[in-house]
Image (cartoon, rainbow, N blue to C red; front, side, top):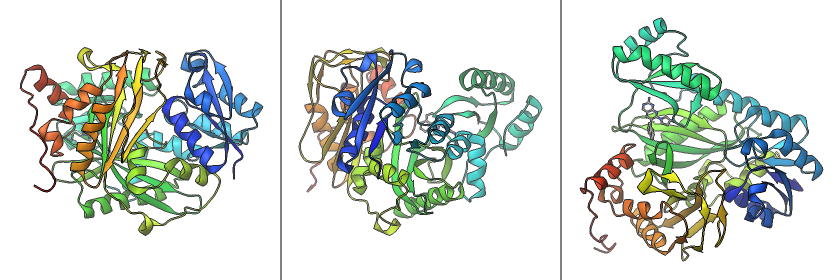
Length: 464
Ligand code: MV4
């Protein structure tokens, strides 16, 4: 077993990893920037090292500073959390060459799955359904016209180095093709240092449903069901839940099997997430693999009872998974809301600053993952996540009602947050009924603006 792990991250996820280390009897090392000296991850870790000034490039994103901190503290392994260096194959490689275990997949897996066009080919070869589109990269406008002729319109242009919605272009007709192709390539070149793009048929009004997998280094791979992350705004997830309101048991089994077979075919080791689009007639298509622990992982932890961070650590130690697919069971319903320091009235613009009052909701089946506390100052250098509110119930109706109650109890003063917006979503009849697609937030905001959005009445009692 590892004696000491360095956490190359900050905020709630650093705390989450420190908690797992404590329960496993592993010492933890926090790294922090000058902007995070008063952060809870620094207080709760066994040791801490200041790694530089507030800009991420000079602290959390600099492999040299992280590796130095690991070496001076004799850390045997590094957990990267999410964001920052979590999906950087070069960093994973540097860790391994310094004889520090990178808690995550092999660098080659991160690199190959980070190439979205290659990942799609790998998955198609493994029998995973993929979105119809070009066989690979589209090198020039001549190839673009041929591919577009085969795929038809509307189509979507995606950057192979992109992901999470960055660098995409929807093309409605032939006359839009050339400018969209040129713009997509130059945007991808600037954003990712790689202009390569591929084409797909554009799926209208899909849902984003992702499958969590775990794979050990002994060839065992399992899935832990799905998370429905359809409620997003500009590719930022706002609400995640499991089970997905649209998945039937056979569909869950098919998608789970596809993810497990895809992971096995890629030789994947560790925790991973297979993202799928589910269209309005229940067909599912692979999109991409996230090779990190995700923000919304607690949703899966609550419905399965499995601690995903501990599993990541055990897998990195070379242990076998302690369960097989049949031993993984799903119980009840879990919903997560992300509470961000953003002003929904001003286009969700980030609003860092001092939290003057902070009270978290409690009671049965309520979990709050946060690094915030009263008088904490949210620095302006990092993301705006203040807290994840995760509630569970015996069914969706109970979880929805518990989320409403918990959002009401949550007090955050001093900064604008997304709490009030979330409260309004939980009064929307379509949301309450689980009827939503990827255009939900946009339409909800438009309806509110025009005064058409009306609250649903009181939720029917369960015995009615
Ligand atoms: C798509 C799509 C429609 N058709 N691909 C957005 C996130 C990134 N991983 C891929 N995304 C999409 N890919 C095809 N072929 C629509 C989206 C999309 C989306 C998907 C799920 C949830 C919200 C979304 C918001 C905008 C676009």
